[in-house]
Image (cartoon, rainbow, N blue to C red; front, top):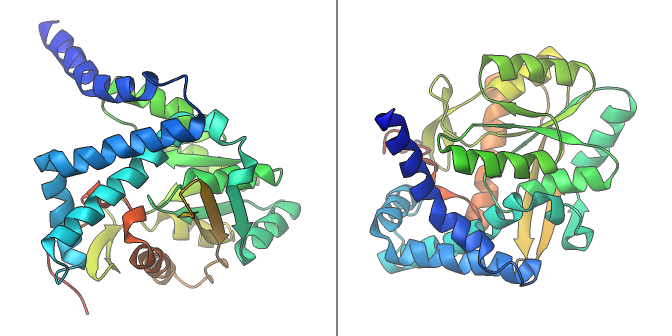
Length: 295
């Protein structure tokens, strides 16, 4: 009992600073609050050594020749971007209604509509880049709804809040694991749309090049696309202008071949996006195991 109480207190203590930052300025406009949390996260990346060291370790793999102070500035800007993204996910119900923020384009959107018109499911793949929830917002704007796959958080306070935000973007919300996989298959076979972030380390995955280094990557999205003959469409929400406008790019579906080739094509697609806008990717995922670079 004491152990449970201590664990519960620890979870709340870790969540409290974020809760405070999210609630203390409720009277301000949506964009002002979003920018405010971005400023807070940028400060964390500057003044909290564990966070800045973790970022520098990961960024140095990809930018070994970048000066340390430039990597530090990149980390602070990443914090600013991710703070805004987290705020918008926590307030996804409001975020989803702000259609004026979104600029949608790309052949993948037409491919999605064609698949839905024929009763087929769709797999949308993306990463922790830009504002990934904007992808589902645009799908909803066009009269469809995309569920999502997510990894439950160990902190129950954070988990409750983040899950509620994700659910506001579209259902079903499916946790990783065997039960979630079965529900995912049913949803796709029934003609549903699902969005999956493929840039987290997957222990049982295949080591594939990502930003120049091998990274354990799940093949599940490509395997499902092949098994059920579904389009696998990369899509990204890229912040432009002052960050309040989000360009949502739906790339052409990845051609069907084999699961490794298709997943590697996605890794290449996301890598190109990150190299173009490195501040918009969440570098804190511990994506790589070994420092070895691949050619």
